[in-house]
Amino acid sequence: MSTSSTDSIPHTSANVVWSGKPWILPNAVVLTISILVLAVAVLWIEGLAGIAFNQLIGVAIAVWTGAVLFVVWLIYALRLLLIRASNSYVLRKDALEVRTGILSTRTSIVVPSGFSDLEVTQSVVGRLIGSGDIRVNAQSEHEICMKMVRHPQIVSAQIREIMSKPIVRIEEHDRV
Image (tube, rainbow, N blue to C red; front, side, top):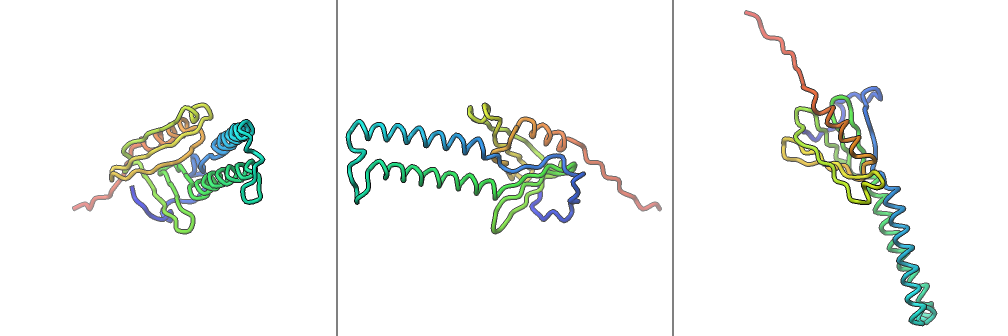
């Protein structure tokens, strides 16, 4: 595995087997539903306790509850957008390229000769929605994580297929 620029790898679309970015839509939907359920539950409890319309700094507690939960949702939604913006994955016919970062980027390229191991991790929700993480280990003991990959089992099979191809090099020998 080497960390370098992609100048040595042709940037033709014919060379690309698969490309992707983190699939955040299912996580955003689960986050939104969770926050809405939490909001309904908390507002219901506040209503039962009779404090929903009490004033705190001139604003009803129910409004404060809604504002706090909206800020929590916004922080997690921005985190998801940041993950999507800062990661991209390209599987080529001869290498796997993982690019991370926004302001400063790091490009990790794993070629078949540097490939060591591959692991797919899916939570229960991840299995239901078809999303998971793929960890690629290189022989240099470096791990590359591809986060929130859509259909990780299919993508990992494609990676295994590319990375299991033997590399044959033909060298010319000086004849005496």
